Length: 255
Image (tube, rainbow, N blue to C red; front, side, top):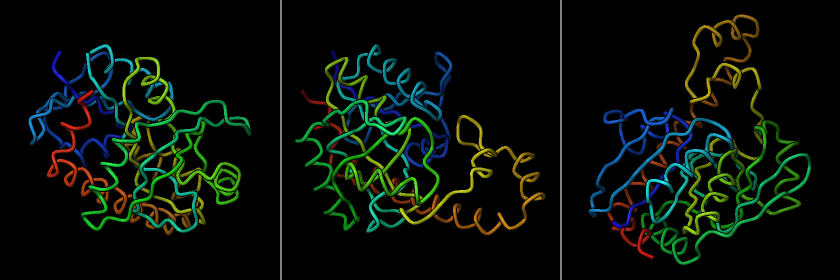
């Protein structure tokens, strides 16, 4: 079987940042792309939507399609106070968190993580390596983020990484996790703004406008989050281009 990289992204914006807007097809209820990367490696990407259940389903679908390595790439919340918006995190450990406790732990592939970190550092990108924690629900407040860093030393938090790690463990596939920080450890995200997003991370304009009409002060939070989101996406795009230029995908998919 031909080596292939299976990539899970949660948000439509993440998929566009990495792979552009064209060529996405619908398969089994999700958007997918099947392309050749610059180094000739086959890439099969599944855009899962937000949340662990969707990410697990997408990762298992990729494994069933015959990929030889799994990756999850996307934005995250920062937990380490030293991290800024746009900083990159390469996971060496993925933790699953919910109900005040960690319920699972997976190691990513150390050799592949080393290669990715070295590639990004060579491009002068700000990159850290450490633990990423996937929560059962969005962690929106600075008060909620603090214990996740203090107790487990996690650098970043998201919703999908543990689900992809679980699928990789089930199928005995190497795993790579790359996250870009959006909101930093000291920043809180108003939940009303997240309520204006659909399951694909796209804005629902009518709900957003209604929210801003009721709470006009949220405009400043919206602008701040839009800047941070744009910075994180730009960092992911730069990192993706860097690893393609370095021919890293071919080394990731080789067993």
